[in-house]
Image (cartoon, rainbow, N blue to C red; front, top):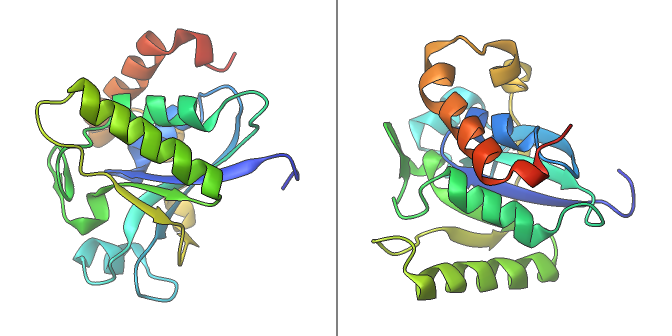
Length: 180
């Protein structure tokens, strides 16, 4: 990894959806689907889906802070998922689908706290923001078949119904941050 790059790990439902958006963001140089902040050593997808490991489905973003800020990444994150539903996104339910920000630096934690507080104060959402904010712990990459899932399967039903609208919303809301 380039020493000037940073990593930030986000959970907002199925990792396929988050990955589909963040691979299109200027300044994000790598997106990896994975699992974090659970108790099991090197969990499988099936184990995570069972809800028994405590892991969240996440995307680990590597980004160039000279091109995109942590704040901008979090602004995108809060537009493309619902941070007010505990352990669920749409029809996906379980602790693995929670909303979470898993920081790797104290500065990222400060920015995340600021953004969450601004959302709470602005009352953008009718319900309280329940996004978990924790230090990244026990991260494991997801299996190879989960990586670049939307890119490989754009016509798959879940991708069409759930991921594609998130990509469209990102493109519409953050046109200036769409990768060329």
